Image (tube, rainbow, N blue to C red; front, side, top):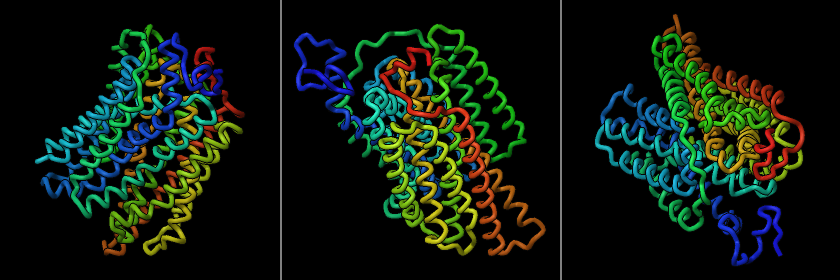
Length: 507
């Protein structure tokens, strides 16, 4: 007897001797699907944690290796450039060469680069390791999500799996602040990179045990014009945004790189509509609900940096929190986010569809940000920060988990990697825009606040608080705009998931 809502014909305890390779592979995946979730979740957590762990450790690394503030920026930018510019290619490589192979290559390469960075004896070695980390991260991140997409096809189980994944994507950065603070304060800044090796060893063992190589993969010609247009476009956009953060939006180099990035992005779309085997088939993004989900991920990534970046600054520079205490202060938000993500995708998404969840999540997140505008030089954590971050946890949990689930829903297996890479790209570019835009707005506000005044310590603290409030207000408007876009693009009702049927029927 063979019956399963997940994998018809293969969920029984045994297979007939004449079972096909595809049936055996599906049977293996079905029986090990929850272990596969653990493996994929650990890989995603390692990638998400990396950004904030390293940011917390940077001042200590700068002191130990003796490099300038200007050089310090390249530790972050070098990773962002290689990671952001190669994500689409990394996702397509997984589609072409098999997800298990690419997952292991990305995992081991990321860990090796992390080990080299942790052992760095100077700036050049550290920044090179970060660039290589970004390259392997661009293989690992989309492959992890595509493994999840192809493993969980039943709507109920898919909701649970993506609730876990969405919680990691949304809350991992905050956990990174805590772990980075603990490692830097009590061990060494080098362990902010060495810790990736620990994650990678455990994840590699799990991947070898529970993952299986894909079936016969159709070899397609790689879309070289598309690869070049996408990679150079993403590189230019990320570099332009990073340059804007340090040199301003009116700087000639900033304008030039942003213009090149936008022109090549248009060229990429034109190329993809003409080639036989596109890097990113337009059918992936032109589905209305899927495209709206990509935009939701993008918008929440732009806005959420108003939380992690400026709230971290506020708690450390104004309230005097240590890095560890700052990380602990984010834990209630992470807890709320995890619970919300699980409930949203497992219980609510199958019943009411993505639109009400994403729109409500954006508006609740905006309410939390508005509440953060009440901060002052002497604010109390329990009365201001805790309720505000709890609302943000609800909002981001609903948006991230739901959007990532919906953005990869109905994708055929041959497009799973590049569809997953598009989610990661939306998040990466959104984060770069948010960092550059909100930093510029905050810096301008602080400068205007102290101009023509005597710069006392209290005045400087008040200027800082005023700049953070400005960032929170803009972040709130970004969330509101995201809610409006989601209201217009996402469809009402449930979205039926039939193992890629939506793609093949041309939805």
